[in-house]
Amino acid sequence: MTRDKDRHTWREGYTTGSCAAGAAKMACLLLRGDSLAEQVEIPLPNSARLTMPIHGGDTRYPEARASILKDGGDDADITHGLEIHAIVRYISPQGEVRIRGGRGVGTVTKKGLALSVGESAINPVPRKMIREAVREVFPKEELEIIIEVPAGAVTAKRTLNPRLGIIGGISILGTSGIVRPMSEEAFKTSILPELDQAVAYGHKTIVLTPGHYGYRVASERFRVPTEAVIQMSNFVGFLLEEAAYRGIEQVILLGHIGKLIKVSGGIFQTHNRVADARMEILLTHAALAGVNLDTLKYLAGFPTTEGATSELLLLGEQKLLHHLAHMASERAQAFTFGRLSVGTIMTLLNGQPVGWDLKAQKIMEKQGWNWSIES
Image 1 (spheres, rainbow, N blue to C red):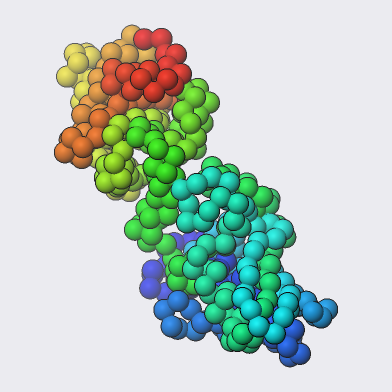
Image 2 (cartoon, rainbow, N blue to C red):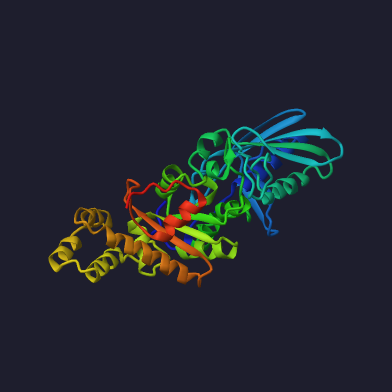
């Protein structure tokens, strides 16, 4: 998707929850004896209504099936284009609507989410939407609704579900029923389930890392429990504040030096379009550490902090990198007004730690995690 057009003209889509509700309602209509329609209308949580195109459907009484293709609009994600199926089974003239996931819908195996362990990963709002949609066709009948996503198991491997302990498929999600091009606030909010899960598992000490590489280093090299490792993307300040709010006591910032060096300079939103002072921070602290002018000019010629950092290691300047890690910790602690104790470990792209502070080492060792760095 290209983002060069006006945000206000971006096309909206609909959530997997809306697809499940729409498919369930269409299946109910088929079960009632109606013909397969080209589209179906469902109620949304905000009392509005949404019309979606039907992909397919058939009836074999007392069961019917219908499907809708997920459409993410101009904010298409990994679920865009997936077939969302609903199978409706008539049980008796009066009773409850029972909803569960079938093929390609994940199962919750870890606590800390909106659903209990063992439940299908169909979130509370989509469950309510499905129930309300089918009740427009069958107001009081007892029904079983099974939501399936044929490609869900494969697709889920490219989502956060495995990390969150949701196995076997995708989650059926959505709080409004509508997919709107994601704002920064919405993206930040989407990170919080990982933090909530860490809290649910009783972790008072966590690792915040920018992305997948840092996650692998934390979990594989340092043996940090996966529930205690949270990918914060560029939102360092936001996650620090949310961690403090939830009663987390200690945080290790772990990630590539090109991201975390920005925190050393007091930058807490690290996207390069917000702030890209990596080399300026590195060169400033190198100059203050006494690195000579010719070397500074040489370092300034590197296009990345990765290259400059590797050169500093060859020059025997690892003490400078340790200092930068210490500065990141100090800035992060000050950002939360001392509510968190923070340590920092900076790495290269291959995961090699190149700069760390004593606080990170002490936190790691106290937690019994694998501290095996040679200083």
